[in-house]
Image (cartoon, rainbow over all chains, first blue to last red; front, side, top):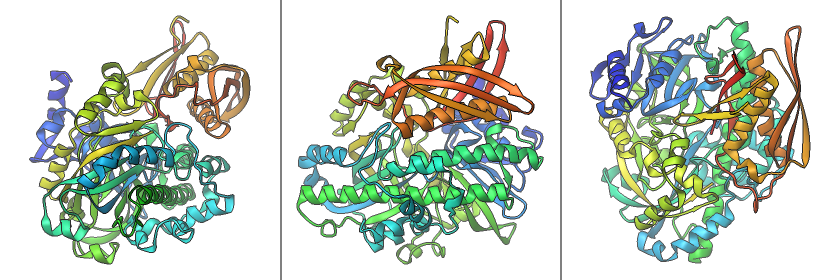
Amino acid sequence: MSEETESSVFDILIKIDDNTWEVPMGYKPGMRVPGRIFVSEHLLGILEKETIDQVANVAMLPGIQKYSMAMPDAHLGYGFSIGGVAAFDRENGIISPGGVGFDINCGVRLIRTNLQENDVRPKLSQLLDDLFEAIPTGVGSKSRLRVSDAELDDIFVNGVQWAVDKGYGVKEDLDHCESGGKIPGADPSKVSAKARKRGRPQLGTLGSGNHFLEIQYVDEIYDEELASAFGFHEGQVTFMIHCGSRGAGHQICTDHLQVLTQASKKYNISLPDKQLACAPAQSPEAQDYFKAMLCAANYAWVNRHVIMHWTREVFEKTFAEEFGDLGMHLVYDVAHNIAKLEEHTVDGKKTEVYVHRKGATRAFSPGHPDLPEDYRATGQPVIIPGSMGTASYVLCGTKESMDISFGSACHGAGRVMSRKSAKRELHGEQVREELNLKGIQVRASQPSLIAEEAPEVYKSSSEVVDVVHELGIATKVAKLLPMGVIKG
Amino acid sequence: MEKRFEYLEHTADAKFRAYGESLEEAFENAAYAMFNVMIDTSTVSTETSYEIELTSEDIEGLLFNWLSEILFVFEVENLVFAKFAVDRLEQDNDSFRLVARALGEEIDLSRHRFGTEVKAATYNGMRIERTPEGWMIQATVDT
């Protein structure tokens, strides 16, 4: 990035504290609230000016509350920036698909085991081969699970409950999933025939891009008490699943974006960017999108759940023990592309808002009624995946997150290099070799994908997580290092 | 046209410009540019033709629908494409209409070299402009 761009970013923003930078109301005409960007000075130096413009654009939307926010992993998106958080008044606000993204309920789930790193290393290669075989990955991959139209309705409405009823996973998994793996209010009649057609053959597929399944181990514990409440100890093996709602979600966003583009005109909402298409929250157009979006959200939880089930089966085969005996408990599952109706305190008053998190994780505080009993005292586990070959982190939600960021934290590392430059500058086989030397094995359908997703193309996840921790919107609990990765 | 399309820098997604002497040709090249993100189109034959007919209230919407529709067909029909032919692109009253064919074949994982999965077309930074040489389309697809 040139000196010129760097200085202009610093010229626009007002420093509030070491990790909080304000986009003033005067930056762009029409801003209804200021912007707040949560980054360190160093991370701000690598932020694109266009990302700040996107934060300012979101601040222009009707009914926005407090601030248009961006998390430390923020980077350029479409409409909203990636890492964007914004809450809109239930009555006077809007709902926008641009604040969720195309991959509705893209998210991560983390499963712990009672295996130690040394138990898994000797069997890692076989384990990865078997997982790569068991879990469909890559462009155009289809699932071995085929669901009927009626079952798809059931999945859209009942989410993970459907899967558990079908014998995938166990009842305790439900409690350890954000929203219990099922948000009420989903309406399959708002989902097009096209979205259904894309969704049916893809349930239980990982997809491509930055999605992955990773075998990891606990490398470091930062908070003994919280770590023990989450069931972690040093050297313990975990696995993480990162994927979303696949073609079903992409199509639902595409379909409703068209409707909401027209609706923005109908309701005279002036849009600084066409990708911010939206409608008044209680309008039929916005509610139709919201009800269809919830279908995709529930679908995505089932998708990760089914992949978890197959992973448990592979572990059972490899270690010749039942998954329960292997201690393979779901720690938690978080969405990082979603809009939800939540209660928050604004200007000292409890109020219902549509919180849009696009590349941001919910990070609810201790005592929050939406948390399961065993996490009520600690706060919500916040799972932050690293990029391929780098550390992932588990954090815990705090009271501060409720005050500062509508109960939200970052979602990952955030790209700094485009896929195009990555493919030009890096070679898949070389990246694979370098990872191998670090003790990380990779299985991928395409070598070019390994280059596109190489550690170098992302910001350092540790730096992003440190900002979140210092701000106090989530507390560091444990660091996980990868041993093996499966990519589309 | 000497250059059919070119990719631009975008941190997270794929952004491109497609060119054409006519608007039809620019639409064809935009689809071609998007497909080249997903697959090495030189590995794809064009034995199968799939017909597409679309309408939209504006030209940007038509481009968004066109790119979205090809992604949909790719996913549900198991077809990959290497050539696009826009036979008609017309405006009547308040509506734009497109009649086109996508030429390709069934996915063959042993032969086709896939690249980055495209999740969706977007309106982000979309431009459809007349140039001295004809038309330029700028689009970003979500990857």
